[in-house]
Image (tube, rainbow, N blue to C red; front, side, top):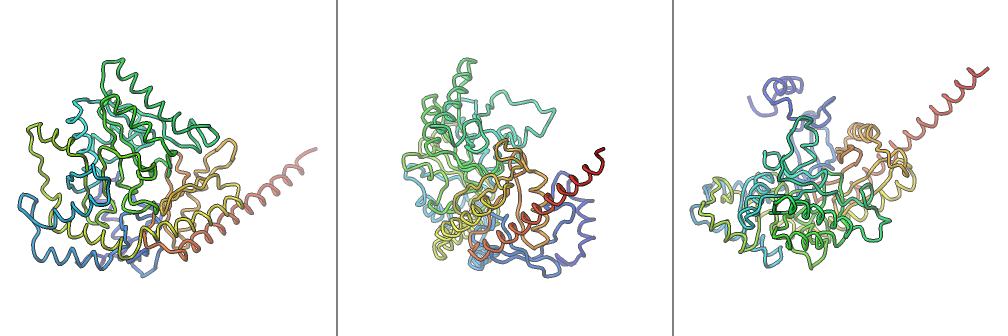
Length: 458
């Protein structure tokens, strides 16, 4: 039986029987069966086209022919592990390093963002000789045990979990909803000082900080953009404590922010992390990822005496695909497209904010944009139910969007990088219609309820 030959009900039935129940699915009340994709579009089993505003994994577009060709051609020749010499590995490492600051020069190739972040923690602990890790509120860094420990986005869902004594949570640098907001005179310093306080408490208890880890832009936390200067100040505190700074670029790297190739570069040229992790978009859907660090950190890891080997990390097929992704980003100016279309999208969304009180905040860079929905702009009451309603109504219009953040009230735009201004027009037009319709329903209900109440009064 060929893939895609089952009818939808049979697919759902087999999934329920054989796939773990904690493996969630988009639009669980009425899931979509996707059988094909191209560019920024996905197609279901009856040929219905959906505009994909969710998929930051298909970075240069679903099933890009150059990427598919590179993988297929290399697979016909050879695929083996990195204990044999092969040009693809070293040429890809060279190309990748050329996008980074000079001091970030040593690569470790692995297979997923989770593997990359787990290895980053090992590197940090070997280099510093310390154990404690500082992470951010609402952070998500991966699904394996070491990363659930440093991912409040996940471990806060577990009522009976025992908090890892070596993990410490700093406030998310959210200037809209967080502790220090846009009206604060210096939110970057204020949030960084919170990290300094954690470091001081760790030292008082006899601990030592190995690393501070942060997504360069928080994604699951609600598309949070840290204030400029925050990372520099945090890095200064962490370095003085003998720790290192890990920038998690798994969600936001490879030109997505438009103005820069890496999101950590938004903080300024004077900030360079000690370790950078990459995943999702690196292979355009092919499972690969990378950790890049300094020679000093790599040499300390080597001196531990334990060889590091990864069976599939850096294999010739993965590296051929990685090279093709980099080529397409340049050839099709996808970083420039992210900047232009992202700016256009944000302008359209700002107009929606002026028009609809439910839209509390618009934030983002390039094609990484968040729309936070609130019922009250002063109290910032999360409009969680309204966000879910918008997602389902957009789905009915064949547009796929997701929501996240601690209250699941932030609509997330992170589409393939070939997303166009026409796509932006379509999405925002549909959102406008849904929001307008919702306001009319609320107004009509208010009028009717008021009339009913008046008839009951003596």
